[in-house]
Length: 280
Length: 249
Image (cartoon, rainbow over all chains, first blue to last red; front, side, top):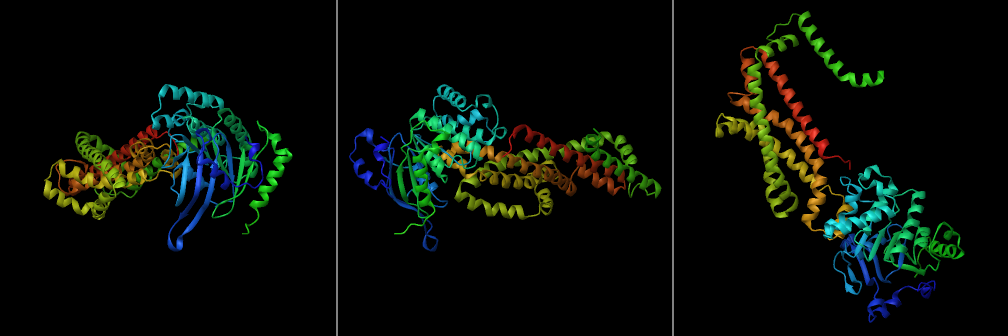
């Protein structure tokens, strides 16, 4: 499935045409049609993003990498339903998107844990807000905490945890409601290099176990390739996909994946685009 | 170990030294008691007048606490209204701003004129003085919610009520305590101002009549008690804060 979309420069503008009449199981998790996002009016008018046409197939992990200020976070906020596109349409699982959904969870750059609540209470937040059955949610929370090695910290307040542990707790919270789509907004951006690598590989395994769709926003090319089934390189503002490439590397991925010739090749390609201006 | 003792001992030693300087200053220069009584004279007077001092302290304390609690009861719902309703905020804020800008001391004689010499006018003055610091701080607290936390709640499709309960109240709580600590100090001052204008009881009243009769030591004892009340109330609120706000942002 991954290798079918292998060619280096296939932007997904073409892919959209096939999805309009597609059968349900082929419905993309997310589909953007001519989406733009602008801020301000008159002299302050700034187009931050687009126009973008993009489809994210269900069950894939898509990484979006781009220079800072290219609107990649805006892209995530649009898909999350936290912002409304200026033009164009966004579809999620075949239905037009209006506002946030309980099927979508976000992990932010900052852990955003409530400092007054315990780790367990923080992880349980989606269950409280969404009104999910308590007992089942609690059980799932403990299972997630166990998977991420946080069981013994369940009763601790966030400030007693290390940066990596806080972000693990944030992942647990995002996964509590078993979302169909996981949106990751530079989730390792605030961590040190070692924790970053460890946590991203952990996430890679976790995601593989869950088999859900994920969209990762990052400015780290290696991280994008290491985690993604597909890497999209964005241009600078207004952000548009410049390269859309399938990452046909075997899973599970580990530290050695970065030495794979194909990894290096994709990295060079992406790097070349990130550090050159678009001429058109 | 000596460092620890030094660290803990500095403050009491400073106080003791100041009292000793005061005592010796009065004795050496033979200053008359009605100008500046010595600390020992103040303590002696306080013991003789203990029942009266207790009675008047209680009166002032009652006015202070009732006024403070009423201010809390009025300002909290108003803070919610000001923070969350655009129209009412536009209507109320100018009024509140004018009210806040009036020096409460200047208002005290009028409040007494309207409400008499009993306990009520003092409570009203305390409410007027306490009200604003609490209101302003709580409104600021409601608005101090980090954007990322709001995004998180919105991504969970949380209602405004849910966001208020789970996010805005915990965030605003430390701000509420900041407001309360300012307000409680003002509250004691407010009660004394009321008693200065017209009263039959309270430490303010006692200070007024004892200084008029040159009973300076008694006035000093009353002032000391006022200070004690202020400090105890302040630390009482801080104690509550430490109990309720166990997290650091």
